[in-house]
Amino acid sequence: MSWIDQVQAREILDSRGNPTVEAEVTLVGGEMGRAAVPSGASTGEHEAVELRDGDKKRYGGKGVLQAVRNVNDVIAPELEGMDALDQTEVDQTLIELDGTPTKSKLGANALLAVSLATARAAATYLEIPLYKYLGGPNARTLPVPMMNIINGGAHADNNVDFQEFMIVPVGAPAFREALRIGAEVFHALKTVLQKKGYATSVGDEGGFAPNLRSNEEAIETILEAITQAGYTAGTDCLLALDPAASEFFDGKSYVFKKSDKRKLSSDGMVAYWKSWAEQYPIVSIEDGMAENDWDGWKTLTNELGKRVQLVGDDLFVTNTAFLRKGIERGVTNSILIKVNQIGTLTETLDCIELAKTSSRTAVISHRSGETEDPFIADLAVATNAGQIKTGSLSRSDRIAKYNQLLRIEEDLGGAARYPGRAAFYQIAPGVANEPPPEKSPPGETLRAAVSVESWKVTRGSVAQMSREWQRGEFSISTVRDRLDIPVIHNFLSKDSYWAQGRGVETVKRSIENSLNFGLYNGEQQIGFARVVTDYATFAWLADVFILDAYRGQGLGKWLVEVILSNPELQKFRRWVLATKDAHEIYRQFGFIELKRPERWMERPDPQMQETPDYWRDAAQ
Image 1 (cartoon, rainbow, N blue to C red):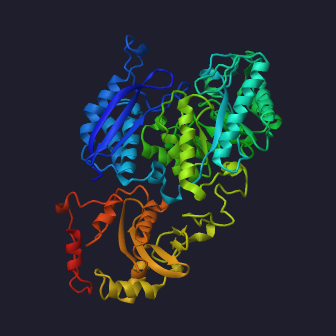
Image 2: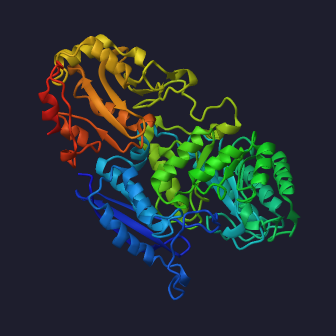
Image 3: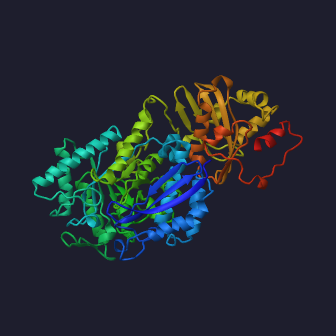
């Protein structure tokens, strides 16, 4: 069973030697998920609260023993007995237990550790990789890495004002090659810095932290390193920046405290970035303006938003409320996603979804204080985010994420996609984030057929997006016009044990008011299932079948996997079904017997032709 048996937390150390929270969630069958929480140095003022002890005698006041106690004494008793596969309910319970807008009572670090560990435990229970559990069969896009190779600002003890100078290897054909490009440029940069007489010590995120003569010299030095490594800036590698402007904004002016002490107005800061974008191959600027300078953000978006990715980090803090405000005001075209800014996995996924529906990119990100936990690597692939920030090419806490992405790419095989420049689709009109391949790669591949024309609205039904998945010669489609009504009717009315005698008009009407999944061998329909749902709170899985000649090939399991991972069918409070002989199959997907059967009732119609005993037998 996927019920939670035990929740336990402990105090561990992050990459800066500061305490953080690690949690383990163990299920009744012994499956266990573990997760550790990162910590930021430059933080947005609206981030969820990271609970620290404040005892100066322990770790300078940064201990997290209270957060650990909150997990063990408050959270654990409430979660034990809950279904780990119901991530939404688990996270909602965590949010309600805390009861504060910023999670300051129990601590976002306490809540997040448990939330992420629960997801890992659920994936372990289902015996599938975390990225597949979170994202389903369409999770196959490897992210383009933004590699922070020169550190400044709050991340380094040097005279560089801006926090991160990054390379973006968009010219690579695959993630593993992008990683190689990044590593080679990183090593070339070390040589360039040494020749210039600069120190090659590294900052919190693994990038070099030299005392340069100016912020501009950081850019020029990186461009030199790209060339020395044998690559072309603007083609193989683009540049990305995270100035973390809130750190040098005094409420009125942007003050370059660490370098030349200059002061710029909001308009002056916009002009500064516009000048850099014209001089250098910059594809992305994160936190180019301070988090409370909304007018400055609006001006920057108007000036650069059509040709540079403008990422809001401190501005949005992975919070849908702040992102909606940004959407309403027309600022930025991207959001940075940091799981510890909001405190639960469900809220993180909600924020990513909102970004995508508003035509904004979502960049999955680490924090400056990291652990060896590579959760965000799986999250990036699961959500097809297309971009990730996880530091430089040194420090094992950063490399852990890159290595996990290599493993995922290997696991995906021919289905893996590396978007390159297309990851920045919001500034490249006509370029899709996931352009369809010229031909299907070998092995099991999945293709979502999504276009404006694919939306169909029929009388008495909700709008439905047509999708298609491919696996060798077999395919699954939600296109209603492809359904072979005679095949479906013949099986249900003659071969099924639950719909004997069902009339063809009843079959047609049920299909018209359901989300339908047809399974095909070429153009021949060989299987079917439908979902009855309000698209908000519940779903009923019904009429699932595979023709006898095609059973024993794993097609039924694949069909259910596709249905449960369909983007239109996520975050329901409950899925239900009735079965007489397939309990073990459905248990693999998290279905369990009714916890409280005494709360359920049915109203059978004695005039119906279908066998009434089925419903009673199937529910028992």
